[in-house]
Each structure stands twice: as C-alpha cells, then as structure tokens.
Amino acid sequence: MTTNLFWFSGTGNSLAIARDLAAALDNAKLVPMARVSGGQIPAADKIGFIFPVYAFGLPGIVAEFLRKMPVNARSYYFTVANCAGTAGAPHRQARKILHARGGCLAAGWTLFMPSNYPVMTDPFPEPKQQDCFDKMKGRLAGIAEMIRNGQTGSLEESSVPFRWFAPLVNFMAIGQFRKADKKFWVESTCRECGLCAKVCPVDNIKLVDKKPTWLHRCEQCMACLQWCPVQAIQYGQVTKNRKRYHHPQSQAKDFILRETPSG
Ligand SMILES: Cc1cc2nc3c(=O)[nH]c(=O)nc-3n(C[C@H](O)[C@H](O)[C@H](O)COP(=O)(O)O)c2cc1C
Ligand code: SF4
Ligand code: SF4
Image 1: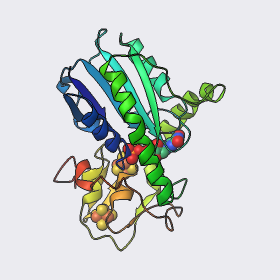
Image 2: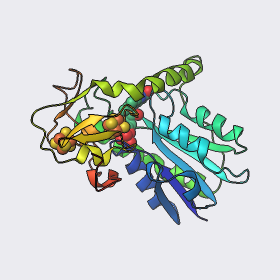
Image 3: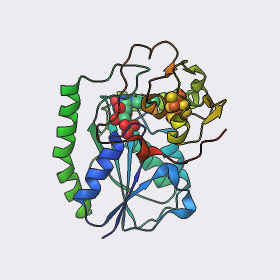
Image 4: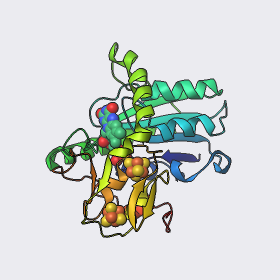
C-alpha cells in the first residue's frame, strides 16, 4: 500500500501531523501542496490532505489544489484538518469539491493544535501547547489504523447550525485574505535576510531594496510574520506586543520554496 500525504502549513502544526502520520503508516510519502502542480502528482493507493482550518473551512490554496489535481473514482481519499478550537466545515467543503470531480472522501479527522493567528489571538501558553501535541500523538495511531484498513469514518466538524454558516464565512474571508496583506509592514530592525520571501508558499513577497513588500495574492498563512528571525514583520498594530509561534519541531528551512527570493 502506498499513501501520499499532501500537506499545507504556515507554522508547522500541519507538517508535524503529516510527519507523525507518515511515520505511523507504511510506505507514505510527504508532498508539500505548495510545491506541486496537478501534472506532477505521483500516483498512490491512498491520498490524504493535511492542512490548517482557515475561517471555518479550507485555506484557499488547499481548495485550489483539490480543484486542479487529477481525481480517480477508485482512490481512497481522506482529510486531516487541524485548528485552534472551531473547525467549521472543512471536510464537507473538501468532499464537495472531490465529489464534483468524481472522487469520494472516505473520512475527515480534526485535531486541535496551538493557535498560529496573531491577528486574532496570543499564542497558547506552553502547557496548553504541549497538551495539544500529546493529544494529537494519542489520536494518530487510531487514525493510521483506519487508513491502513481503508475504513470510512465520519467527518469531524462543528455541529449544526454552526456548520451551515461556515461555508459562507470561509468564502467571504478567503476572498478578503488576498489583499489583506496591505496591513503587513516591516520595522526598521529588518536585517534584510530575505527569509520572509523564501518561506512564502505563494511567492507573494518581493524584496525591494532587500526589504519585503507584499503583492496581494496572500493566503494569510502567517509564515512571513512568524518565521522572521527578528520579529520585524507586523500586521497593523495588533501584532506589536504578541509573541510569535511556530511548532517546536519545525524549522524555517522546512518551508523554503526558493533559495533566491524575487526582487
Ligand atoms: C488565516 C487563519 C485563519 C484561521 N482560522 C481558524 C478557524 O476558523 N478556526 C480555528 O479553530 N483556527 C483557525 N486558525 C488557526 C489554525 O487553524 C491553527 O493554528 C493551525 O494549527 C495552524 O496550522 P499550521 O501551523 O500548519 O499553519 C486560523 C489560522 C489562520 C492563519
Ligand atoms: S525575514 Fe525579517 S529580517 Fe529577514 S528580510 Fe524579512 S522582514 Fe527582514
Ligand atoms: S505573504 Fe506572508 S501571510 Fe501571505 S501567503 Fe506569504 S507568507 Fe503567508
């Protein structure tokens, strides 16, 4: 049995889940969604998508990936979402896209991980982060067993009626995210290292005089802000006094798409 695990992650939570799941499965391959286009997708018996919840649904890049990838009616597809507290309806959204293209979603699991969105909240305190990591590891053995056996499962999401409103909230928010990068700015402490441009999954940062400028096709993944080594990137005024977060077992190099940033 071969399994492809397609992952998308801004700050490493989804990547940590993908890595742990790959270790628990036989013959699983990790494939970053941000680095492959439809034509390059390797074949596998089972195909999983691992991603963070954005605005109660799929990140734009994940929905786009599902819309473009080749879909096979006989493949076993599953989703593993992770969020900081309110899942909304990401699995139903993925199921709808796959169904429209002739595929079938067998199961959708949701894990709770630390918040990475400083626009809204402070990072979780460290004991609460550790609790998320422990619970995530505790659940993955059972999830891997179900995948190995090709079992179908329920879609783990918010309950009704909240779930009904989730697609509308997601649709409206994802539309706003692209241009919401107008609120990013850079402090004079910027070291001009270019890392923010390298970790951006959609090449949305151009370096002008070695400092970042944003090109308005943003996913709001927070990678640029969270991985800046000197915390020089801010979003409006709300992030000025907020600590930064990334998963403790992730490093910026895990997210680097291009060695030479644009600019
Ligand atoms: C733009 C954005 C929107 C988010 N929306 C939600 C949400 O609707 N519900 C939720 O519980 N967490 C939400 N989160 C938190 C992330 O889903 C969560 O922290 C996730 O573990 C981050 O994964 P990553 O490290 O792989 O990027 C959001 C985060 C971002 C950046
Ligand atoms: S990562 Fe931070 S220090 Fe490096 S160029 Fe970007 S803003 Fe400047
Ligand atoms: S500009 Fe920053 S927040 Fe937007 S997609 Fe790139 S790394 Fe993510």
